[in-house]
Length: 316
Image (cartoon, rainbow, N blue to C red):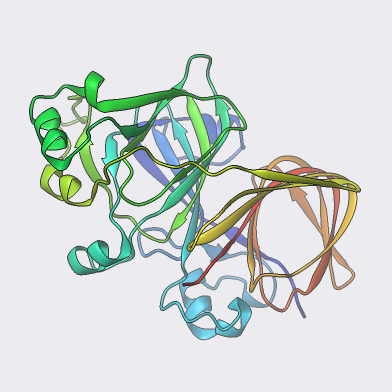
């Protein structure tokens, strides 16, 4: 029987984390410095487990390996995407991710192009998005001389904003921001600057200056331009479509019948409650649920008042 695959996933504690994954989403968290919930993940550093139906208890990486028919017979050797919710109670490091070619050669895994949907942001919250160096030489000089105010581009953010962050982009999520991140399935990060902070053992975290300079791109990042379409009981916004993924925001008010046009979909409920009906069976949906609609789910009906981020891979 075709059915959605609901997932139970792992929390990750971070030096910059907080407790809003509990207060905002009701998740059980390991501490008050919980930074990330890897909501839909087959990455070895945090694999999701199916928690319903025929495949209950099966890890997502195993399901992808053994039942590729559920994923459109994808040719990607690993499940290609990873969905996270991040709670930045402090600034993340200023960082950059490599592309596939560099990451596979140096790290043995995919590169990391990602995007951010801002769930909430404190008044005055900012991100770092890009840099001002006009050449690799100037980039190296500004990093070496620690002229961060001159180098880094800061942008104010608010709830509902969206940013596309290709590999090679200098970036950092600022204090007081909660985001949903859709990314390639990778855990490779090169830190450029970490605000000189120390961990609970009094040690500064490792920086990766040479690798960062290798992979950083010159020039301002090009953000996507979301496009919205209002239909009966739903407003669908295409947030980005790249060679790696497409990401949508669905605002559902009432009842909407939909059909599968991608090999499979990853879905995260960011607000509201309602249900999804597949093959005449209705599954309740609430804020904080994450699930996959595999290839054999051809049609479904969403009901209620729901804000959903949906994504699918664009294999290339």
